[in-house]
Amino acid sequence: MAFKNHFVIKGRLNDLNDYTNACRKNAYAGAKMKMGNEQIVRAHAQNALLRSHLRRASKYPVVIDITWYEKDARRDFDNITFAQKFILDSLVQIKVLKDDSRKFVKRVNHDVQVDKDNPRIEVVIKEAIEDGE
Image 1: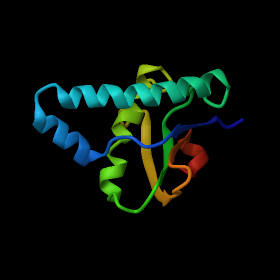
Image 2 (image 1 turned 90 degrees about the vertical axis):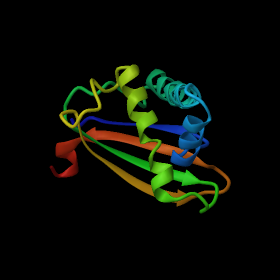
Image 3 (image 1 turned 45 degrees about the vertical axis):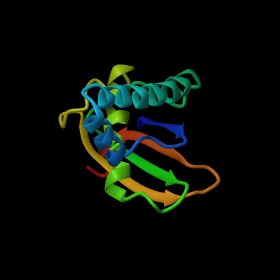
């Protein structure tokens, strides 16, 4: 049976512009922002682990599909998807992924949509062979 995992992060994460501005502020603001975003991701992922929606990957490489539902169309695609760094690092921290190197993560696919009533980030982790590769 093919392995497939998913979880949802409610709301949104900081984007590249937020992170860049924090790093320019002082030497520690960027690190603090990264830790805060990772804490949000870990909380949602650990909740999904407890509810059996998310399991630790056992077969590699994986493909990760991330759908970003924004409250409006103001933020640029590249600024939004930058936050994949927070997601991947968090998945490694809680041992859902062994590593986020290319040996373990073959590809990350992004889709950005608008849902003004329910902004969220949906993350699906699947085996690369399931994705036709």
